[in-house]
Each structure stands twice: as structure tokens, then as C-alpha cells.
Length: 591
Image (cartoon, rainbow, N blue to C red; front, side):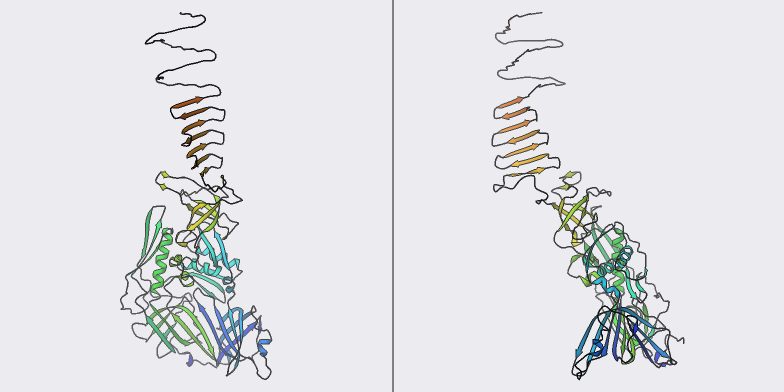
């Protein structure tokens, strides 16, 4: 029977609420007295069902229903709520599917009860903490699909995200929290129904519309049972800005959003703050920054009014988290369109009521689940505090940013990992120290703003597996550097010396202890500079050649040849002595 949205459900011909519960596909006994049932659906949360059944007898000292094992944790459960209309069960029903996670036997002064808590099967994504590197240029949609498939969950639909992330790391966070955190920062929401997991882009229009096409209208005095709402001028801002450090451009990158997404009510209040800023030293692309600003602004706009409204449950119009409803008759400050972030079905003693939560949370999902870490303020679900170990997998950066690719063994010890910047002693435009690690080197890594997607290599590590080129001594006199091919630069504080040495045996040494400067080669050639003396020695030849002049000037100059001594001038030869000039030999030939 079709009805107008303003029609009060109690005016319809309705006999009673229809409640059907199945465990492992079998309907439970209709003799069970279900006193209360709540089914809670919320944006970015796992659907939950709680039911209470009268159980327990003092006379037999037993809980007979509980003892059957029908509701033991792990069993699959289905719950259907509907109405008997005109003596028949209506075709429109509300359905919950999940598994039993806990049960509890309770004895009080008044009664004995069995309470059962159920969760959607997606709860398996919350049990363990996951770690993973994700491929370059991946989207939030890709991440969601991979994680849902990894957990063998049914997918209703996943909207296509347009923002590609350069590198993403899941670190010590559950698959659920990581998935929701990633879709949250790009303006997407997750809602789970009986059809599976649905991830959609949050789009807001004026007036707003719902996916189903129907928009429930509630009116005070007609179909509102309870209403409570408050307005907080501290939540909304006229503008949201995101500031991050762009190391590629060496500047602070700023993105802002001042769009009003929806006018929920006749709002005449003034915001306490005109601007909200998010600041981080971590790198974000322009597209990522724009998404952060836009998403935060939408969250604030949809959170200015928060409250709850109760009404008789409807089956002809579906109301789910992420929908809008229209509320009238509650005063100009609160009537209008309201965003629904949670819907709870409440069944008590045969009466079925729906409670809708008005407004959203202005914070990112990561801020709610992990508020203590600094990266959560920009919505990042993973954080890495302190230092981590990395293994170098590549030293080339196709983007020309001088980064090194590292694998984080405690995240994923099989993949090539992510790019990390390299901290060095000095760095500037065309200057600085240039020492890069080798492939398979062990490095120590820190993270900008605790964001695992923004690693920095702080240094390299030696161990018994990767031994140092020098052995440690108590005196600790020797310092230095030895390259991969054993080119050495060594400092000795005891000898006060500096040595540069190649693997071919060529040495240059400055030594204050001996007062010498020495240059040696592998064949015995040597230049030795001592106090007041320079010695040049070669095991074979010494050639001195100049394009200009060669001058020898000294108090006394001696030239001695063990064999033959020859002096020749192409133009002229002059031998001159200020005193005696002596030419002497066994035979002297002149011309």
C-alpha cells in the first residue's frame, strides 16, 4: 500500500511487527521470547545487532537456550524485521546478516537473560593489525577492493576514486581502519548493507538527494516521536586550508576550500572561527591537498547540527547512513535537510522504532580511532613513531628526486617497498656530501610527521653480517671511509695522519707524527716530503716535461748517472761557470 511521506505509520492497517531470526539458515523457535533487539548501521562502522532473549531457570539451574549452543560465537545469523499488513507479512523488510561474536548469560533480581551480540562479517577486518606496501599510483578504490577481496567479503559497489597516491603504507593498523582511513580522506564513505560493502563518493547537492531517490520527510506533530538536536558554532568554518611542505618545489604548498556544500537548516548563527588549518611537513600532492581541504569542509558543514530523531520504522522508504532526511516543524533553526550518519532499528516488546543520528563527525576517521598520533590530523590511518629498519632495494629514482627505494621488513619483507629521501651531512644546490647506500644495505629510517609514506634514511648500519671496514679499539684512534671497491680515506688521531688509498696500492699520506707528506705507488715509486727535504724515487724511469721552461735552482746541484749522462739542446747548449769551469773525462771530444 503506497503512502504519502507525511502519513503516520500508525494510521496504516497494521497488525504487528514481523520478526524472523535464522541461525545457520534455520529459523529459531518462535517460543523464544525476544524482549529487545537493536540493529545499528553507521557510516564507516561495522553493523551491529544486539538481542536479548528470556533464558535461565533457577529451578533447573540451567540456561536451556544458551545450552543448546545455537548462539555460540562464530555462527551465521540473519534477522528480518517487517510488518504484518492485512494479515500478511509485508514484502518490504529490513535485513541484517552477520555472525555471532559474543553471548552472555545474565542473572538479575528480576529475570534471567541471554544477550547476544552480532556483527557483520566485515568484523574479520578489525581483528588483526595489517602491514603492507601498496603499488605506486594506487587509488583509495584500489586499496579498498584489494583489502575486501583479501578478506573474502561481498562487495556491493565501489565508486572510482580519481586521486592517485604516489606511495601508500599500511603499518600496524587493521585492514578495516586502514581502508576506511584511505577512503575517508578523499571524500568517500563506506556503508554496509545486506547486499555487501558499498563505498561511494559523498556528493552533496542543494537540495540533497539520496541514492534510492526517496527522501523521508518527518514532521513534528505527525510522525516524529522524539527529536533532540544542538547547534555548535565552533565546528563550522568559512574556509578550510591545508598546508604541507613540497620538497620538490622547496616551498609551502597551500590548498583551500570555502564551498558551502549544503544548507541543512535556516542557519543564522555566526561561526566562532572563520578559518581552519591543517599543517604537516609530510609531502602531499596538490590533488591530495585539495581532497583533504574539501573533505574536511564537507565534514564540518554536515556536523554543524547534531542530534537524534525517532520515528515509527518504515519499510516503504529506506533510510540508511549517508542519506538525507527532511525535518519540519521543529523551529527555523533546526528544520530543513539533515545528513544521517547512523540509523538504529530498535525492537522492544513488539514495537519497532527507528532512531536516526543527525549530523556527522567533523574529524577524520583516523582522528577518532588514533587521536594521539600527529599524522591523524591529516587523516592518515597509519603512523610510524620512532625509528624503523629498512633494506635498500634500489638506488635510482626515475622522478629525479634523489630518493632511494627501501623495503621495511616489519611492514612487508617481500616487496621492493617505497621511496625514501636520504639525509646527508650537507645538501644544497649543486653542493653537499654525496654518500648513497648500496642495494641490500641495512638503513635506519625516520618518518616526517610520523607518516609512513614519507620516510627519510637517517643513516646506514653495520653488524656482524655487514662488518665494518675497521675493527673497533679502545683507543678509538682510527676513523675513515672505505668504499665498495676499497678506496680508503682514513684518519688516525694517534699518528695525526690522513691517508687516501686505492685498492691498487696507490697512497697519499699526510703525517704530523713523522712530519712527512708521502705519495707512493704499487711499484715502489715514491715522493717523500720531509722537513727541509724532498725525495723522489722510481723503480724505473722518471720523466719531467713542460710546455714552458724547466728551471733548477739551488746552492749546489748534482746530477749523477750510473751509466750515460746526455745533455742536448735543439737550438743551443750553454755551459757557464762563474768561477772555474771544468770538463773532465777519459776522452774529451769538442765538436
